[in-house]
Image (cartoon, rainbow, N blue to C red):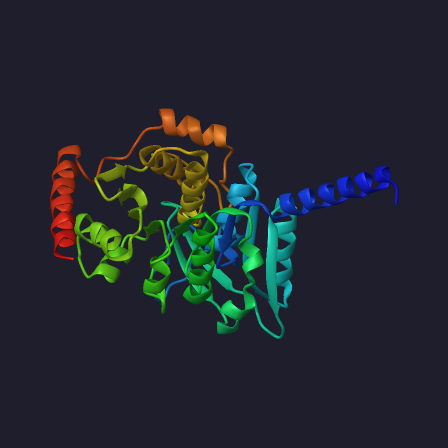
Length: 352
């Protein structure tokens, strides 16, 4: 073969390798729940043994990890999702929605199984929601069903602990590959402690730190989580009161933004998406928390888990200029708590 043809073949091969490498790359890989939500709006939450008129009913996609993947894709990140669906109309809806949003989805379809469903009652007066859900255990992703290739090229892996075993494996592989790991946790699922050993940024629900650490106050439980599991940051979302986080040295608190809430469904999911986006952008922790709170607040201004995912420019505008709710924690209070937590961590470390 002539030298010219050899060079041409090598060039084609390099081009193919580059395309495969680009296809492998993902800014965020989100692993966990997807759900099909039936949103039922009512004038007020019904009392026991009563009748209430339905204002509207909508069938919309949701789910913790799935919504986070979609939000990050809308903000311009290369987004990948890993999860399970049933072989039903709801599963087909999830597949179609990921394709429409441009999210690369690795969906394992379970035969003769219903996809996860939720019926969500939304109080028109407050926007607060009550969730009734149904999920078949066969929708749990098993470690042997999770190829390592699915997180190849990731900059960040986001998990919600549904279930913990494959999430822990993915988190471990992510760290080995140099990626960051974020976690959205709300309960003591089997294997959650093993998962946390591979998590960099844990932002749980309001009650999760107490359940995990056995300490009722967040200024005590959050430092305990970082000490016990080695997380870089441990925090808790507080609904209308914003978010509190501990970075190993000090507490960071961001009060929530005041918005006209229509539906709080998906607020936490979009918060975690905003956290991941801002983290990947290289922001400092206070800015990350502000961006995440602003993204979550705006999502509450429309119906559904993904109805209020707004462009980055609008999120930044609310972050800069938006009115805040009253602070749950004062500046001096957090300064004293940081000093106490720092002394406690140093004291505990010196015993080892």
